[in-house]
Length: 514
Image (cartoon, rainbow, N blue to C red; front, top):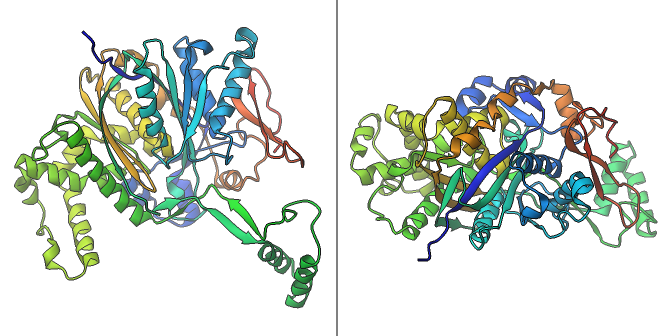
């Protein structure tokens, strides 16, 4: 009899930079109230990428750790699919750089063609790209017992300094071993999806005219307006031989890795998309929409832009599920206000404001707090100490949830996890998984929270130099890791090419050349 094979995640590996900035240090530098960031958002520290690190090096280090721990040979890995929104190339995928680093590492024993037949690609949809890569790879491994795929999520969450997103920054990568009959998590077939095109958070190509660039530079150098205009006229009558202004286009396109974003709107989009995706999941799974869906989910794993995002955003779904269950009045009795109704307000904005206030009151009830402690809080612990990892955030929350259960000696075998993924722009996916009997053996190898105690604390000035890319030497030299060796700055067919290498544990790091 033909049966559909179980597919899922066999193992997980994480790579985090060895540097971190305490949120208290940033709060002092920005004159922010630390208690609001710590108690209100759950923030303690942010991981900061060193001068020699980028999304490709972090991904390669996570993948290598995963392969070594599971004794995988290059020829066994059929694909390495990468989710990232921190790419540094508009054409060449970061996964191809990961492939290059792994090839270098294995070349001596396995030959220079060790990964020749390995499929690589990047999937980009803000923070949900790695979940897309996972879903695609699950379908692929289902097609053959010998198919083994690796999905890696790698990102650097970087915001403009002193912006409303700066204190949520983070950096890191999580690699997943995806195969049939997994020992960690088997992922179910039903997936809920909700997609709408919005501009809650995006990284556009910014355009600046050549005249605008030159005029700004001249004014900054102290030239008066007459001198500026004379130079601009001269520029119109000539052609630059080389450099930034040499191309024939009237505008210079600039891609910045810091986003344009609207925090409150993005939260609203997150909240709506996960609700819509849950509704779709209910239909796809053949469940009764009149009954609560999440009651049988022992843990919930969310994308966490900041540690307490899920507990803040889930209140409305919690209320809806409770009403379906028939016990909402027990919670409502704890709230000293009536639930607002649309008919009570002339303007929709006024209703939404009153509704948001009511949902905040829901989150403060003892019943909701117990729900959070049981089903959500374990996944927040890692985010508090690391920050936002964009595509890797939801998988870091998964690792945090599993490790917390291991430490508390809680048996999760055969329990059900519900996942709420989100990517700005915007899209959500809801899916579920069963924890397999081998989860302890895999989780014991994470040693994730223990590794955080070995990190190097940054002072504010060093953090600022790293953020502005003026720190050219590594704060903590790479040892036993892949690193960015240099970026080619010379004109020609290799301009901008990135070169990576491996540095053994015993090696002494040289200054990074960018």
